[in-house]
Structure formats: C-alpha cells, structure tokens
Image: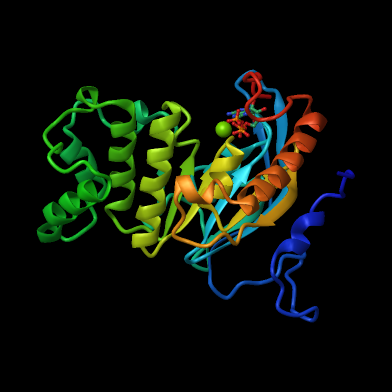
Length: 301
Ligand SMILES: Nc1ncnc2c1ncn2[C@@H]1O[C@H](COP(=O)(O)OP(=O)(O)OP(=O)(O)O)[C@@H](O)[C@H]1O
Ligand SMILES: [Mg+2]
C-alpha cells in the first residue's frame, strides 16, 4: 500500500454531494452530530517540565447513534484525545462540542469506562452501590429499578450485594459498563476497556457492549489496540498517525447488524476491512518506530 497523505482516507466517509458545505477542516458537517471534536491539538507537560505535542490536529464528528473506534500506535494520543473529548482534559487548541455546546468540563451525558476495572469501581462499595453511583442524578424512585435493569443488561442479576473483589475481572468490567450505562448517557466512551481480560472474556464483553449500545440510544466512542475489535463493533474506524497525531485514515465498516463473533468475523468483508485498518496502523506504527498492535508492548511515548 502506498504511503498516503494525512487524511487521505477521509474520502471514504459518505459525502452526499460534492457540493456539500464543508467545515473549515474539510469534515462534512453532520446534522445528527452529538459530539464534535474540531482541530484538536494537545500538548502535555510532564512534572519535570518536558512538553510533548501529543495531538497535532484531530477532528471527528460522532453521530447520535454511531459507534466509532479510534486505533493507532501506542503513544499516539488516543487516551489523551478521549479524555479531551470527555471534558476531562482541556484542549491546547481547538474545541470539543457536546450537543452543540462547547464542552469545558465533565457532563452527565458522557460516561467513560477505562481499562482498569479495579480503578473504575469503588472497592468498598457493593456492585449494586457502585452502579447506583451512576444513577445518582436520576429521580430517587427510579434508581433501584434502573440499577437492577442495568445489572440485568450486563448479565449480573443477583450480584448486586457482592463486592468488586468477589467478582472476576470480566464481571467487574461488566459492572463498570452497567454503571456507565445506568444513567442513559448520550455518549459512551471506552478506553481499552477489555485489555486486561483473557481472549474469550474479551469476545463476551465485546458482545455485551454491542448489545448495550444496540438497546440504548447512545453513541459510542471506543479506543482500542485491537483492529478486529474495532471493525467488529464499529460503524467507522479512525486510525491516528504517530505523535503528534492526526487522523491518518477513516474506514467506514458497513457490516450488517446485529453482528456475531462466529459469523461476522468469518466473513470475507470482515477480513478485508481488518486488513485495511491494520495496514494503516502499521504504517503509523512504522512512522513512530513502535510497530504494530499485537507486537510486544512498546513503552508509551
Ligand atoms: N500528563 C502527561 N504529561 C506529559 N506527557 C504525557 C502525559 N500523559 C501522557 N503523556 C504523553 O502523551 C503521549 C500520548 O499518551 P496517550 O496515553 O494519550 O497515548 P495512547 O495512544 O493512549 O497510548 P497507549 O496506546 O499506550 O495507551 C505519550 O507520549 C505520553 O508519554
Ligand atoms: Mg492509552
């Protein structure tokens, strides 16, 4: 595959007409946008005063019911981008808009699930109380029912009184997902949510997320190292370039839903899409000297 200029694959995004009005950075405007990241640049400074330009210029539009994944080499700024998109970190340049309004802080409409489930759940609280934390803004009379429904949705009925340490890693991550979804967010963001579990559990958790998303009305933004996972779950996959990152490629998935591990992953189209995404990730990895996903973990940055 030839080296492509940055953003070359943006043309893969469906554009209704050549004459469609474009925003300043060339992204087609979306009427159904729930989250919009515009020309985001992030420079982080470590405690010893070293500044790193992590993200140079990233734009993305997330439609109300879309599932979008972000992949890219280690250290390309995926976590940094997600944190900025969630209002957890202020952009150095550019802006994030949630429901049309500039995002300056965390908001109830955006839920985030991180990789370390042992850090997402409060160890001193039962699973039921942990999930109830996500429901604290709901009217009091609805909370118990909603917590029960959220636990049922992730297959944890009957586990409300258990404590996190009494559950397997996969179960804890399901509890974290229940807590994220119990408030009925507009956007569910996930940063490598399945990276700490075994392969079989990972497949189950991917399906839990797929069903949660299908049964909800939210959009999802997933950061993952796993190209197959990104394709399996998403409507679109964005590949970040090496740091300072830009969107190197954007691949529309278009596989029919509902998808199943056994059938979807065996289709020739799934293999083609995964290979395409992997080519771009490897291209970005070569530029950063960090190699491809699945290779031995490289030191971030
Ligand atoms: N608080 C910070 N201060 C300074 N630099 C930071 C800070 N947090 C992250 N960085 C640097 O920013 C770069 C991008 O980090 P980030 O965690 O966003 O990458 P990533 O793509 O999520 O990587 P990984 O795939 O390994 O999770 C890295 O070089 C990292 O060292
Ligand atoms: Mg990360």
